[in-house]
Structures are given as C-alpha cells and as structure tokens.
Length: 279
Image 1 (tube, rainbow, N blue to C red):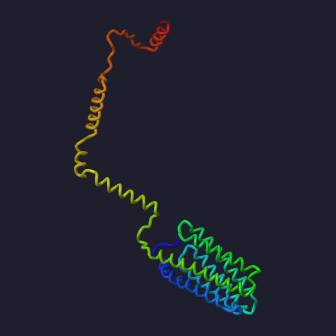
Image 2 (cartoon, rainbow, N blue to C red; image 1 turned 90 degrees about the horizontal axis):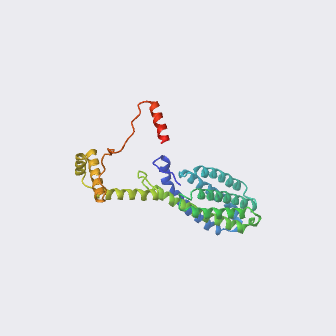
C-alpha cells in the first residue's frame, strides 16, 4: 500500500511513476537484446544488467512506498553484486550465473513477502506473487550446476528482464493511479461508504415525511406532561369500559364485619396473637 497525503514524499512519488514506466520498457528492451546476443559476450552483459536492477531499486525507494527501506537495501546489495561481476570479466559462466541467481532469488523472495503483506490493500498482489515465485524459481535454477554454460545464462537474463518489466510496469501504473486521487477528499472503505449512503437516504426520507418544524414545536409547547397523563388515563378507562370492567373505587370495609381492636402496647399485641392461636 502506498503513502497518502501532501508531504514532500508524496510529491516525489507522483513523479516516480514515469521513471518506473521507463524502467519497465527498458527491461523489455534488455530482455530482447540479451536473447539476441552471442554466447561469447553474455558473461560481460550480466554485470550491467544487475547494476540496472540496482538503479531500479533506488527509484522504487524514492517512490515513497511502505517498503522503501527494503528497496534501498536491495539497491546497495545489487550494486555490490554488479561491481563484483564487472571486476572479474574473464571468469567462466559459473560466477555470473550464480550471481544472477542470487539477484533473482533475493528479488523474488522480497516480491513474495511484500505481495502477501499487501493482499488486503492491493488488488494486484496475486500478479506480484506469481512474478516473485517465478523469479525465485529462476534464481534457484541459476544457482545450480545446470546453468553453468552460455545458453542457460542467456535464457536466465532474458527471463529476468521480462519478469522485472512486468513488475515495474505494474508498480508504475499503480503509482499513477494513486497519485491521480485528490488527497483532500476522505476515502472510505466500501462498507463504510454503503453505510453512509444508507444513513443519508434514511435521513432524507425522514425529513421529507416529517411535519413542518414550526407546527410541531407549537403543538409540543401547548401540551404538558400532565395533559398527556390525563389523556392516557382517559383512554385506559374507555377501553376498560368497553371490555365490561367496572371502574375501580376506593376500598371501604363493610359495616357488618367485626374487626378486632388494635392493641396499644406490645403486651397487648402478644396477648392478641396468643388468643388467635387458641381460636
């Protein structure tokens, strides 16, 4: 996922997509040119190809991605690798093949890790994962004993150029898409956008169906809580009358009921209890 905002890094990132687009086209040209080489000169080309890969990693580090420090580290690592290949131009095919395999394995492992990390935010993570697996596979083959000749080295450099072209072109287009977004507008997730849209639609429907605000306030001001209680009680009495329930009145004791006298002391209360038990 890419950084957002109007910081100087985002301004640099907005101009880096063109360089990565040029790098992708250059990788395609390098791949085609390497496949056209004679087997004698392929060992001398491997060093500049790796150095061009280091330059592309430096451009990616300036693009302002979250993994810029990985790109910066790989730029330094690949620079040292290319310098070693240029310092020993007269070696056989084993050294260039092993160093090209080192370049592809490191670059492929990083692509696999980054694409897996961004699978929830980058819709191209599957493509980058496939590119990383292909690069790691080519690097594993290049480091083995089967690639210590001219023809396998030519095919390895051509395949590396095609894979790096795909990766840089995809990254350039993603940077272009991100830099074209206006960062002063709040971007919500699809779920939150749906929720906000539903809330806005419901609020609009409620306001359209509600009575005028002035008349509602007038009615509310005329009625008090006491009036609401009286109205509710009257409605309840009316429903009870319809159901045949007589209205309730205060409970009064009947005159023909002989009630005991109320004792005035604790001893009298105790004697009254004993008398009730005897009866």
